Amino acid sequence: MADRRLHVFHTVARLMSFTKAAEALHMTQPAVTFQVRQLEEQFNTRLFDRGRNQISLTAVGARVFEYADRIFALYAEMEQGVRELTGDISGALTIGASTTIAEYMLPTLLGDFKQRYPEIAIHLKVSNSEGIVSLVERNAIDLGVVESPVSNRYLVVEACKQDELVAIVPPGHDLARSDRAPYRQLLEYPFICREEGSGTREVINDYLDGMQGATGALKMAMELGSPEAVKGAVEAGMGVSIVSKATVQKELKLGTLVALRLDPPLFRPFSFVHQKHKFRMRVMEELLEFARAYCKGQTT
Image (tube, rainbow, N blue to C red; front, side, top):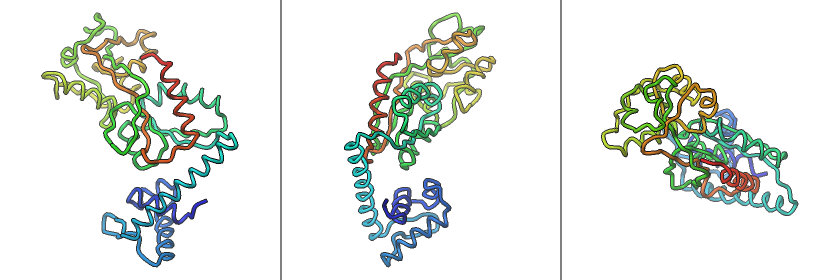
């Protein structure tokens, strides 16, 4: 219901980029520029200082942005209040999840949630953990679920469940005869790892950084973009890897991979991430409560 020009301006000011705002709003960049210029004409002043490669808010632009923040928060609060009075739990949510979580945790959770709340539309975006945190920071998604630590103090991070990471090797491998894998033994073999920005890779690097003589000692053989690709490379005998235990249940039953508990063991949290100051819709509260209950019922 709010002025379209104000909405476009608010998005540009939040992202500090006409290009990123156009992507977030699914508009062309000239259309975004036109909307902002119309608002500037209404106020008869510039709202942005435009440099060659960057923009910044003018003093007036900063004041307009403050008011726009409050206006959109009030609109969201009004919609929430009406839904609470009418008992209506509906709407749409955009969730972002890192690859491991999207493939192995969310399908069951979201399927059960959709059965309980069929009127809620859920859109899922998949990226690595770094990409998901970036989407939350840009307010491009309502809620992120990630598998690595988040350091942005402007975001709310809530641990959902603990996930164990294990070493995986093919059945005929030298290490397959044991049920544990001391980290030093893994350093002796070619290692299959996830791409830069992956939460799994970040957690493994942090784990090894805390071990004497292990920093930078991995024999990197391949970098791959998904858990499935990593498992396939290990099954083919191209190296060893460390993955979430939740991702190899099928392979363990089929006998195509052997999982070894790390020594010392390695756990990480799966966490919800969202904006600290963003008004929380009732539909998002319902999803968070549902997800918390789901996580409590899961074993690590």
